[in-house]
Image (cartoon, rainbow, N blue to C red; front, top):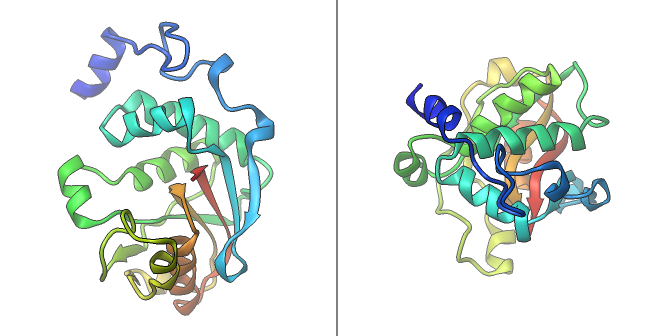
Length: 201
């Protein structure tokens, strides 16, 4: 509540041009042509709103540091860029962050992003994954990232079975984490249609 009041009393400025009122103005948003749909490990279709660089990277970092207005701007952007991907029969499943980062930040940014995106798109959200083993991917080499498997568990198999899942994350690098999550969801009986992310590294 206090955070929302603070945002209302002291609206942010666009990190790109300094315009008051929003952290990401229309002029500084990634252009529609910056969005990409690629094929990740295991054949998973991954849609991204832009590259993890410049203004988009700076707004994502603000969001990770607790700026709710940055999260609002990013979820709106992702909803716009994934309009042709999400359908009413889909279920959004956020990719969980590590326990240490969640504790330090006080929240999981992918869960917040998925809930906001679900509200924009009219699609339900199910927090079905937890990170059960292994460390964060940051700092690992590309080959180490791609080799990492079995780091996630499904905590709601009865709810997952038979659903058509779209995974949600903030940034994709090699796609190994998304592939690992997709494999876990499929073992629980879900059909994993795609993944949507804010940015690709």
